[in-house]
Every structure is written in C-alpha cells, then in structure tokens.
Image 1 (cartoon, helix red, strand yellow):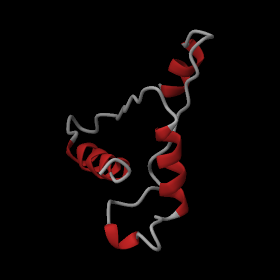
Image 2 (cartoon, one colour; image 1 turned 90 degrees about the vertical axis):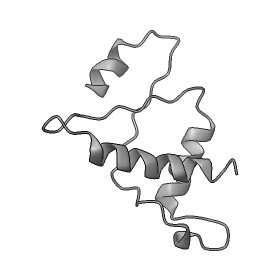
Image 3 (cartoon, one colour; image 1 turned 90 degrees about the horizontal axis):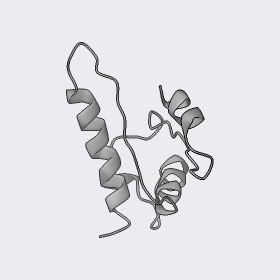
Image 4 (cartoon, helix red, strand yellow; image 1 turned 135 degrees about the horizontal axis):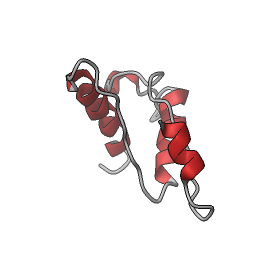
Length: 83
C-alpha cells in the first residue's frame, strides 16, 4: 500500500501520498479569474514543488479503464500550468 511504501522509504527521501478523489474531472469552465477550485490549486502547487511523481492505482476486476480516465483528467489539470 502507499502507506507501507512511505514507511519503507529511505530517510533522505520525502514521500507524500495525495488522494485525488476530491479533484473534479477536468473542466476548463471551472476556471474563475485564472484560478481553479481550491482543491485543484492545492494539488497543482504540490505537484509543482515535487521532484518526481508516482501515480498508483488499484486494479478493480482486472480493469483499469476508469483509473486511466481519472489519471488523464488529473494530468490535464497539471498540464494547464505548462501550456
């Protein structure tokens, strides 16, 4: 689990787990005055200060489609900073 991976990390490595479930699906109509909802902005700020990012997702009934759709949406929000 993510908690076990964090506990097993070497002391020089800082690991933080972020839950993406409160982040809405990508919708540029959510932008108001150049900002997105606070949960999206907080997530984007944490991504910007990270040296690396690891996405992990469970496999439900041997299907990953919904996880891939969610990941695509999250990556869309992240990419808005770099376009």
